[in-house]
Image (cartoon, rainbow, N blue to C red; front, top):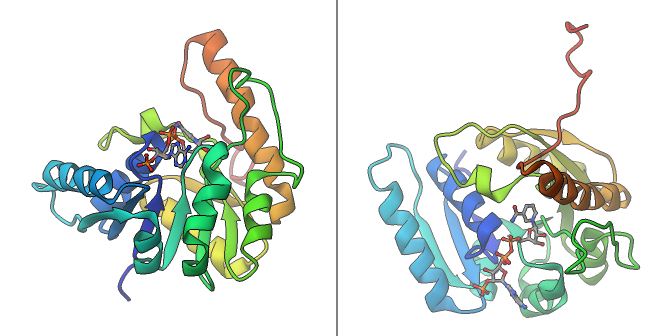
Amino acid sequence: VSPPVLAVLGGTGSLGLALARRWSAAGIPVVIGSRDAARAAAAAAALGTELAGRPGHAPVRGTDNRRAARQADVVVVSVPYEALASTAEAVGGELAGKTVVSAVVPLRPPRTAVVWLPPAGSAAAELAMGLPDARVVAAFQNVAAAKLAVLDAPVRGDVLVCGDDRDAKAQVVDLAGRIGLRALDAGPLANAGVVEGLTALLIGLNRRHRATTSIEITGLDRSGP
Ligand SMILES: NC(=O)c1ccc[n+]([C@@H]2O[C@H](COP(=O)([O-])OP(=O)(O)OC[C@H]3O[C@@H](n4cnc5c(N)ncnc54)[C@H](OP(=O)(O)O)[C@@H]3O)[C@@H](O)[C@H]2O)c1
């Protein structure tokens, strides 16, 4: 079975580009989306050059967010919360029936270390309300782009996956696993607010400890103590 084609909306940014780099290196074709097709094409070309010598990598293309969504089976939304509504509106019609992964963390700068959630309960729930025909899953909010960006360094940290569609969640768990991240089914989309809120805590920890933190769930290994 050929791997799904992934689109990363906002794929020119820190997290989106890091995910695109990892998935492409793992042999999964990626379309980088942007508000500006030329910017996406430039980012894809640079990534293609970087990956050229790597056996097993898949092609990366770049285009505007709408075309990227149209060309993909699974669409990752990786834009700042302020851009969520406008991005969803720009691509909405292309997402019906697709797995749509929200990595968005609702933050209110400058207080980015304080948990703030939108009235819907989470950015992912807000996205799902506007996309009744899409299978919205929340994931990747607690991974650090800076760590993901360095291809040959393994990334520590668990990915908590929330959503109301079992198959879509399983697809996202698999996609995370392909880039070396352990992903765990964290229940329904109604739980996404907790996962998104954790990122504000991590941002505070990062500041206080001058570190790049992520989360790991313990106790799952039954052979352990
Ligand atoms: N950075 C991390 O370590 C990290 C980790 C976990 C989760 N997240 C979350 O993932 C999302 C993306 O994070 P990021 O750090 O990659 O963000 P970013 O670099 O600031 O932005 C990502 C992309 O979104 C687009 N964008 C920016 N402002 C926009 C606007 N006003 N309207 C429409 N599009 C806009 C831009 O793409 P174009 O200009 O090309 O359209 C930009 O390259 C955020 O919600 C963030 O909270 C980030």
